View 1 (cartoon, rainbow, N blue to C red):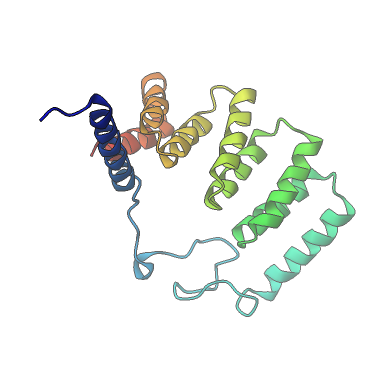
View 2: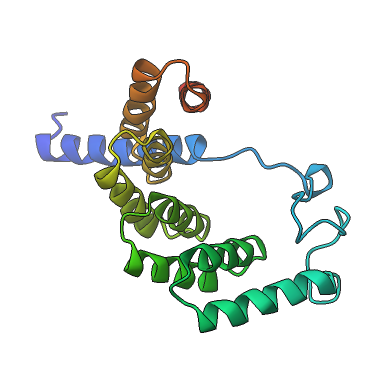
Length: 198
């Protein structure tokens, strides 16, 4: 029995797609730390909470609420004070209000579009919100301003990995290891490469 080449190509294509999906799902699974083993962040939002509590309006200190309200009032009255706007945005991000934090960070970029620290915060917030395309855009903007920003290069590798472009992720991370072998970022890159190779 002779198989037509078109059927053979179709069969190879279908098997390849199934293999890619399987490998991608296996390599993109992340180790999940059980809730009972995770620790609450040690910042001023979470200070008085134990590991079983989530921050709510009932258990966040009145001192912190007052600070947030005062910062909000100040920022509304002084939107060009980028140091205070950033402070408020940082607190909002830590307080699980990323939408408002993103708006504030973007208001800083209108004043100074080359703030790589703000672009990095935006990249992280959007990535954590699963908006990978937006996180990639912010990361690329960082690299346009500072092509040697190791954290941005590393994060671009993470983004490529999340998108399933594992070869591109490896390329980004290996570049960091080769050029900056003694950096803290190179250590993270080595660990990420090892995870992809396992």
